[in-house]
Structure formats: C-alpha cells, structure tokens
Amino acid sequence: MLKTEKNQEDNSDSNEQIENIKELGTTNIPTQDDKIQVLTIIGQIEGHIMLSPQTKSTKYEHVIPELIAMERNEKVKGILIVLNTVGGDVEAGLAIAEMIRSVSKPTVSLVVGGGHSIGIPLATAAKFSFISPSATMIIHPIRMNGLIIGVPQTFDYFNKMQERITEFIIRTSKIDKETVNRLMVQTDELLNDMGTILIGKQAVDNGLIDEVGGISEALSKLNEMIDKE
Image 1 (tube, one colour):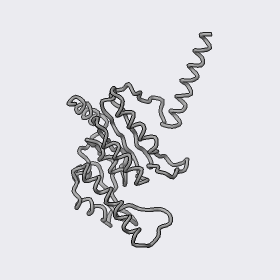
Image 2: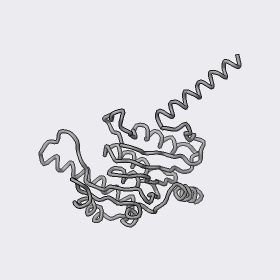
Image 3: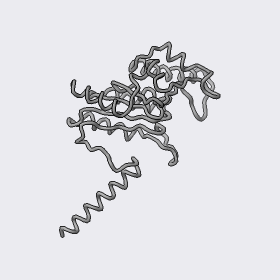
Image 4: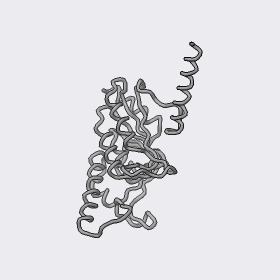
C-alpha cells in the first residue's frame, strides 16, 4: 500500500515537472516560501487575442494572479522582474506595469536582451531598474495592426493611448517628456520606421533605467531594499 502511494506521489511530481518544462522551460520554479520571487516577462505580451503557438509570449492573465499572490504572501519580501520582450499588446502591457508599480514590496527589474515598445514601461514600473550592457530598448510611437478607420476619432484615440504610455514612463523613471517625444519621432535609427534604439548605458544616460548591471547587481540591490524595509 505504501509503495503504491509512493509511486503515485512520484508520478505526480514527474507530471508537475513536465508541465513546468512545457509552460516555463524549467523545472526549478520558485515556491511561495522563497523570500525573493522572480517574475519573467519574455517574448511578446499577449492581450485579449491569443497569439500563435509558435510565438513565445507572456500572458497577462498569468502574470496578474502571480503578482497578487506575491503581494499577499507575507513570506515574500521582494520581487525581481526579468525582461526580454519585443513589446506587444499595449493594454495588457500597461495593466501589468501598473500592477508591478502598485506592489508594496521592493521590486527590481532587469532588462536582458531587450525591452522594446511596451516593454519600456514594464521595465520602469519597478522601484529600481537595471539593464545589461548589451541589452537594447526601442522607444517608438504606438502602432496598430488590422483595419483602421480613417476618421479624426482614430487619431484622437492614438494620441490618448500614446499619452498614457508617455505619462507612465515619465512617472516611473528619470526621463522627461521632451526627451521621450524626441526619441520617439527620430527617423534616422530604425529602418522604415521612427524611433530610437538605446543600448545598455544609453538607456541610463537618457534617464529610462537607473543602472547598468546584471543578476548579481539586481539581487544585491533588491536585498538592500528588503533590509531597509
């Protein structure tokens, strides 16, 4: 009887590991008992419309419950957000960014690879932000896919959406509105598009990110912030 129960438990653990590999690419998932929780935002931010199975994505309906659970758990003292995203759905991205910003516990973000488009407010949403030396951030005006009705209301909607993004960025970083607007409309950096690519220290120099660093620096800063609580 005991052997049967042991086999069932082993099978359950094995199935959980398989699901973790399928969903998250690893079997080493932090538990809610860990003092520091890690939140990864990778690929494209998926909104109300599902992306294709071939697209690496972060689903906001997964991230939001995670953040709520971290906020409620007294054992969790700090959150490290690791980003490598090409952007994606604006509404979903802003929703996640506002959730991160509203967490009462210390939060540190680390951009590795890239934090493009709506990935910028996701990076600045943390209370302190890092970027790896080779990582890039692309700031550009919002873009829409699909059918667009050519009426003045559409233009007003685009303006309001852009204002929401810009306001969040300047509220959560050291960059000013004039610099954001200037970087957004440059035409000599992106092929067939407008905007600016900032690499590593350039993002810090422009006030988007606080410091250049990696995992070690991000964890040290997070522990420092936790100790001050």
